Length: 150
Image (cartoon, rainbow, N blue to C red):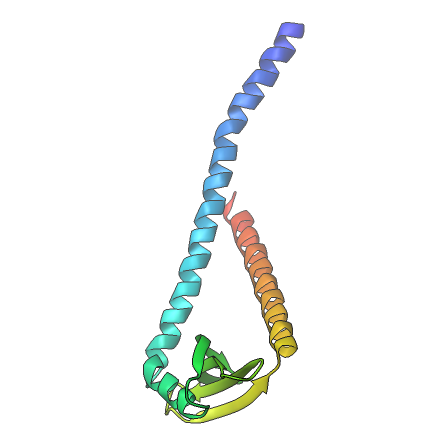
């Protein structure tokens, strides 16, 4: 009786190994799919832009003092408009100048000064937004996985 129980436990453990490996592969495939989806979204936005990032950056730098440098930049859709967003450090000033330049016609959409505190707050909010989007994506992926199984 005891040997039957031990044999059953060993069989169950061995049978579970491919399942665990399969689950690990599935997670890896989902992560790769998420990365590809995110990359496709960036490529899609870039294909919609009518002006280059370099041109938009020149427009942004022309709006601030000489010697200013671009701290960060991104192409994004904001309030339904495709924009290049630049955070620019200006010599002798704290915080950054945030400039939004239209990716369609190169016009200045917005220009505002951000204090270090406001910049940190925005970064925190953006991180939370990305985390929520990732959680939603994982939930959707888990739901689609369960619907595929018989």
